[in-house]
Image (tube, rainbow, N blue to C red):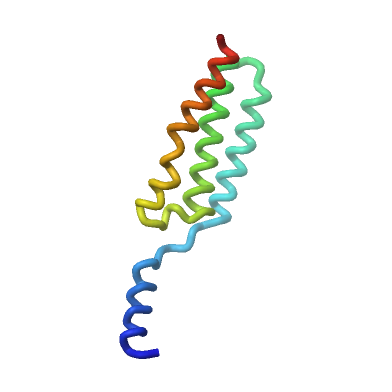
Length: 104
C-alpha cells in the first residue's frame, strides 16, 4: 500500500473509533424491561389506560435500546439517525388512529 493509501486508511479508521457497546448490559436492560412488561400486563388493579401507556412506553424504550446499540445507530452520523427517525411521526399517527377506533 502506498503512503497516501496508508494515511487515508489511518484517517478513516480513526474517524470511526468508539467504545465497544456493552452488549450483555444492554441485554440485561432488555430482559428487565421484558419482565416489567409481563408484570404490568398481569396487573388487574391498574386502570386499562395506565397499563396500555406503560406497555407502550416500555416497548418504545426497548426499541430505542435495540436501535441504538444492536443496530449501531448510536455510533452513526446524525443524518443516518434522521433516516431512522423520520417515519416515527407516521407511526405515532397510525397508533393514535387505531387506538381511537377502539375508544370511540
